[in-house]
Length: 263
Image (tube, rainbow, N blue to C red; front, side):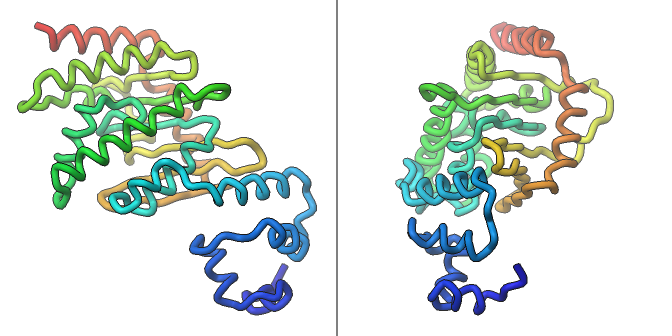
């Protein structure tokens, strides 16, 4: 609308710092204030207004993960919030089994291996967070739809201290793939080149008109992309999915890998 922060704040009867805090997710917005702000911004689409009203109501709630806020980076807490509201998650995982599919033992081993500063107690708590996140796959009414593509290299990981960990993890993948809302594909070691070679990413899809969000993670950092800017990631995911083994062939490969660890 071409309004500056100060102009908007003055029109709303707010201070500039209050609007800044709201825009930076430091302070929430009250129920009666949101319609006024939407009117000021010329937002008339009833679906958009309804979606933002629902988000405002959700933002006032404290998710279960807030009990672990002292342990988690804010970007991780943000992602768990997005995950809890998403209709569908599409995950490309070239290095690790996705968190929604991990066993507790695998989570502890990988968290302990990746981190350089966590105590054993903190590692256990963070593994608990991963296990709690998985409830979205079996929540009543509308379980999260998950499409996960895992590179076979991640499935060849071995844990010398706990050799049964990977076998149990492969069994978890096979069992979870039986859920009607979960699809798992394996990217074979001998696949052709594909866009996923640049790194892993996650796509979170929501009830329209809310935009799709892409998450890219690296050591200690996380980047979110949303709206039209997610189109390259969506195209890349389709090519990755087409390059991976079919769902049935992926199941066979997982069985083969699990049986190989029993010998």
